[in-house]
Amino acid sequence: MAESTTPAVAKPHPTNHFSVRGTLDPRMDALVGLSGIGVLVLIWCFLTYGHLIKPFFLPSPLQIWQGLQDFDQRHWLLPAIWNSVCRVTFSLLIVTLIGGPIGLLMGSLPAADAFLRKIVNGAKSVPTTGIIGLIVLWFSIEERAKIVFLVLGSIFYMIILVKNAIQNVNEDYLRVALDIGATRWQTLWRVQLPAAWPQIWDAIAVCNGIMWTYIVLAEFINSNESQLGLGYLLYIGSRTQESGKVFAALIIIALISSLTDWVMQGIRGRFFNW
Image 1: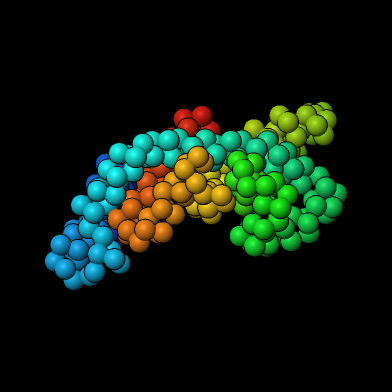
Image 2: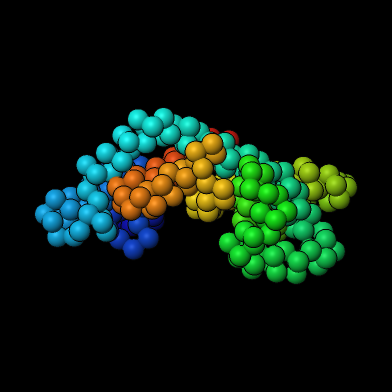
């Protein structure tokens, strides 16, 4: 009797959540993530309510809640959140409109890259905190200074990330476009830019996160009640030596930054998933 030559069908291996470079389904990923937060909160409560660490160094959740209530009673909390969100959003728009086209040109035209590369890399290496004095000198201490600080803190990263996104486009796409008669500008606008959009959107998300790390320093410029922001709330907590208020401001900044990042990732998955 002749043996069958039909190849055996490989059976799928069961998913191993603890394998190297393994994957988690979305539900399991969310569950593990929430578990990590829960463990952190339990350790936090154990240290604070167990009096194992002084409240000056690590306030309890109750002290942080009281700090938030105090800000709210002064009618500072919501205006501070709104002002900080507006500053970051407006600065991100400026960085995208200026840094995006520059990165696009550098990634597409070798001459533009050679002309600007050393300037951009050198400017990126200058610490933004070191030019606060110049920003105040040039733009006074009003709202413009805060916007300029946020823009300078992230625009060079935007340029470099967009440039890399353009240069990472598959060369086969460019060859096919040129073979069918596309001009240089048609190749740029109809091939390179659409193919690079997912990575460009990632660059925008990265710069958004950078700005939220700089918002405290930006709002330290002329911090006062008339120019409310989350940085000002943190400044008040530091000046009055109330660690609960300091941690409250830091947690709000972290939550807003994480929320905006989650929203931007959702937009990427919905509109730029290629």
